[in-house]
Figure 1 (tube, rainbow, N blue to C red):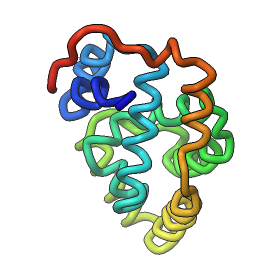
Figure 2 (figure 1 turned 45 degrees about the horizontal axis):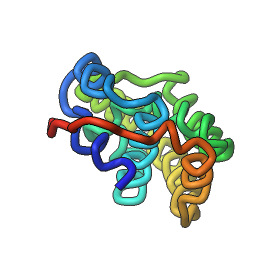
Figure 3 (figure 1 turned 60 degrees about the horizontal axis):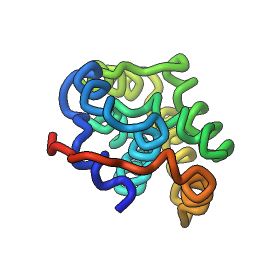
Figure 4 (figure 1 turned 90 degrees about the vertical axis):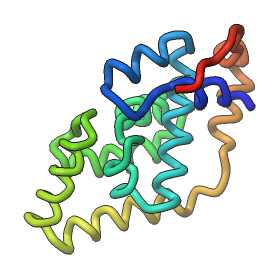
Length: 152
């Protein structure tokens, strides 16, 4: 319920500028929470490969920043470890991420998949949302939304 207006409004399907524009009515904390939620949904469904390959990959930077802000240091480190494999950053453009994934597959083969699997397994072992809830309880004013949300 806390994230529903953000989830229904923020546009992850077009450009990064569209994403930022659609999120500007929300707090940075709300945006980071949305990114973390998208990350867990995608990684738990199909791994980091799916997260990066789908439209949700556009929130990768917010995910890292959200992990850090919410005190999820181990998750931030796990994710940064994958990002390091890509040189520390990855495109916000879906097609470019898809090309990079294909390039990594071709160049590194099984090593690439093993790296992803190791990071995936770390996420699979996280069963809860206590860090996120603790942060929300500590800073409830950051998660109040007044107004009407628009579906993207």
